[in-house]
Picture 1 (cartoon, one colour):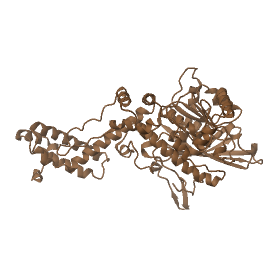
Picture 2 (cartoon, helix red, strand yellow):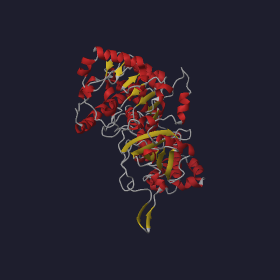
Picture 3 (cartoon, one colour):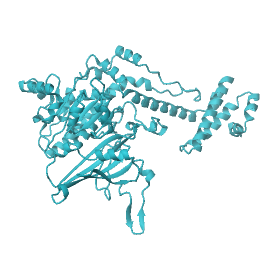
Picture 4 (cartoon, one colour):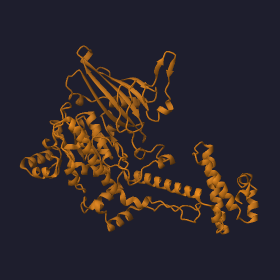
Length: 583
């Protein structure tokens, strides 16, 4: 989109937007203003009346950094930040994403010493990155997510056009994005917690609740995006919130959980330290980012005691050799013990990058991957280019790791095409049935494969067991089955277009001929309904004519009395007219 919703070129000419086309990409545009006396105010919304009153309130609260984040800012005249949030609409399973450009302007001449405004673009789509403002005459740049990573609409119905665009189980083109937020700065956000990435990968894979806390909304939303992208090409069904506030309706439900109650599978990105007390029973807490927004990132080898694995293992340093040399130093050991003893509440006094969890990871950090990462040194320009290289290294590894983890499910998506000389009108065989117990038993017997066996502990079947019981498996498995079934239907349709039924009918007995006639007639009726609804494709006419000829071919070998009975139906007779075409 390169212009504003309504842009006057000449006095007598006004370009009006195509709202139907716009709604495919953008739900609405909002302009919010923060008033120190009245709070958040919705100044403009376009198209109007697209949000309910409850949704307007939720967008309003999510469109501004909270008071804790604002305290991190200095008193410079202008401070801009870009972040995004996600919220559930009207207590159903549909979500909206809000992409925020926030400006805080400090000016002593203004009432209360300044003002704060946000421009928010709401969309159903989880764009990887968005926003180059001003919107009016500038190009709005977005990175579109791959189709197979998008959530299903219409209560989970997978339409044929969306199914056919889904990526295969094993990605073959590494240049094609394989999941949501594929260009998030994974290395830049988690560079102080690199050894913990494999633990975080497992936690998201099995759908464990995770609280991510960072000093600012841009940092916490980026951290959540990075974590979600870690399990690509697996579709993430965990409820993730890149920027979550105490005003979200879901917070009251979470805050009411009693000790011992299980948190739902979710990833919450927060900046308000109050969450550390309110959600103190959250089993996994991740702290990322730095409070000093304007400082350059320090060299990786000189990072402070950022992330810690249980037992005092430090995640600082770039190479594994550096890690091993410093891992068991007395200072590091004491710091690690203190960090674990104090727990996440130590962030109330000082921000530190760390992971607090009692989960024992099964996947071991890949030392060869860590050794390939490049240290950028002090130069911000060099650091940016090296971050691109390091992100590519990390993403390729976790893409390969997830792909290999999902590979044992491949046989359940195996499609079958008609064999040569067989009728393409018999019912295609069903896909192999799935039993979790049978799958685990067979997998335990034959092993997980060389790639994973080198990187996982001997209790790797437990990870598969927890994955099968978690929230990600069923939605992913159903999507993959739907894609496979659609592909099988496509293959059989191609076979019907290529098969010469006159050669096959000569070998049919009467029962086979009757069954084939019924099957072809069913496909013809489906084509007719598709054309009448306007959903026919470019090759619908050719497919329809081919089906008619095949119907006539089968009709010609039926007994005379059956032919006369079939011709008594006028609609059927119209399909069977001009049998001379078979000669």
